[in-house]
Amino acid sequence: VVSALGDLSREAMKDILLKPRNALIRQYQKMFALEGVALEFDDAALDRIVELALERKVGARSLRSILEKSMLDIMYKLPAREDVAACRIVEGVVNGTDEPVLTLKAVEAEQATSKSKKSA
Image 1: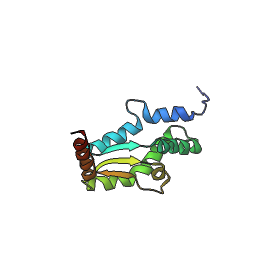
Image 2: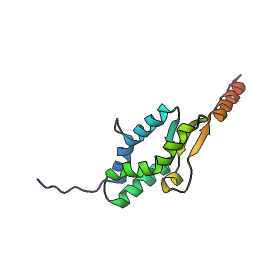
Image 3: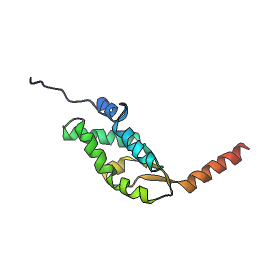
Image 4: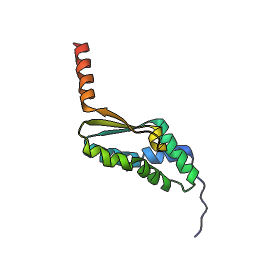
């Protein structure tokens, strides 16, 4: 049986990244959570991942390879750092031009302390 399939839309590609129970983004968030780091993706970064996947014209398969390429260095560097509480992936990370935005645990603790002082 031979069948022709149409290309996936931007919305469908983004849904594949985010919505399924075992979505790629959720898999990476789980891996980072095992290291005690919260992983977040900016909308611009997700849009860039989808855009690159559409340019490759391979469908949803290319989403994983784009994510792996973008996240590889980060995944090796973060476990060695115990001071990172959160990692935010911005569009520049996907492009290979920027580093992720890291939230350090000391900064996070200071913010929580200042919030509790303001509410008291």
